[in-house]
Length: 636
Image 1 (cartoon, rainbow, N blue to C red):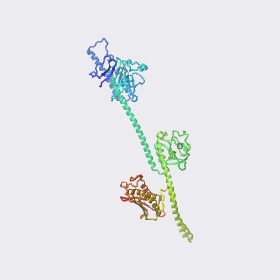
Image 2: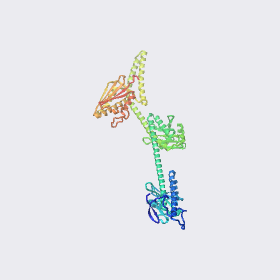
Image 3: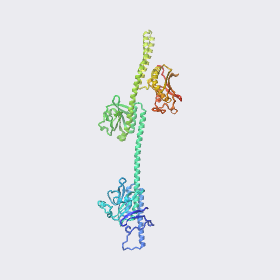
Image 4: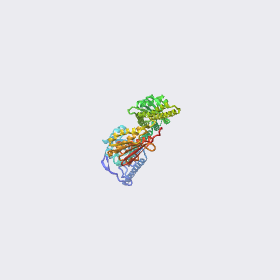
């Protein structure tokens, strides 16, 4: 054991080494430290051998007491979970072994550096805090050395205030540092008032041994606390990660559900279904303000379908959320003044608990609100539910705005297409009307009923053609058809194509050749076929740019089945082999700057909408795309 110094009033500071023990353990203690009951009166005379035997017996008894105390503490360290109970046991053993009246453990506060009494034995006392160097314990902590004080009131470091406060009389003090495994002083063990005589070096050694047990207990406790803290942090992190994973899964499920929808009702069904599932709500609803009419409608999910009910803009809890742009969370809807019994009656449910959040619009004003009602099990909606619903509402509002925008754009495109093609429709009407006019004149000149009936049947057939043209336009205008199939004069159509492409291709030093081998008529959607031509022409020009220009050829033919065959050839470098097999997939590009990879996917989709197909053949001398558009039979 390393040497340490002890201050003693009679001899000052002197080095002390733990003595080597013999069979009895240690050399005999000074007479003043002999246990009570073993003393002899001044008249008693012992022989040297008898005195030595008595001293060895006393030392042996002391060593047994110390060993027993250390053994009890060691066992307690292994089985006692409560550090306070363990420290109290160590204190009781300290007072017992060194025959002190009371004992105190001071532990260093890691933040302030002060010594704070952690455990007090031998009498009740309020918590004691000592600054570094203050009092006997503070001096021991600062110096890291034991101190023996025979007369406390003679030591200037002693503060008698504690005695005055408690009525206790301190006579003698023994204090030793508590040192951890690194050698740092983490506290002080202090005992007061030895029962018989003064504290000795053996007392200091024994107290230091017990203090080391206290250090082990404290370190174990701090390690346990550290583990508990780390476990708590890990558990908190785990919970946050689980919440994040849950949110991401919810978003993924929501996006997956919304990506499959085609109508607003399907969108609302998918969102309300997911929201009800994650929050355990029994009723889900949307209140939406129509972007054109500005009228509000309540959309309620009922048995997998959407039911609509007219409502005032600020009606009910969901209307209040829409007009105030605030979240409404209530555990008793019947007591909320914003609740509308009339709206509940129209919608077919009674609000008990409710969670309503606004749907954000592009201009910062809500486009509506999203409401969930009556959580299963009569439980209230929680803040966690609110966070989930806000997440759902943010995605739902974006999806609804995009749906409205897409519908508006499609209406505009259909109206634009109808307006652009209306003149062609009127032009097409001239033919049947001219035929009808001619047959009417012939009917006037015909004398026989059979001849008039024949002319009448021919006139009726022309009216059927006119009716078919009318139905095509109306179905397209209502969005019931994705393409508007009309009769197109090929010579005129491709002359307009040549005029629209020639100038733009010439800027890229690309020569345009339009070879219309069939100058008759065909039936297709002019606008969409024109989009095919423009996409392929643009791709060809970009491909030939690396060669400084080239030739782009458009050939119009018919095959044996009567289908219209459009062939587009360029003199570019051809299609890279690594993308040739997936050329018509969305977002596939050959690395061109600004490319979206949608052009050829759109070409394929338009061809398929016409019931046709598109193929490609590529070499190092260029690429050739062939678009086949089947033609309906005459009169169909």
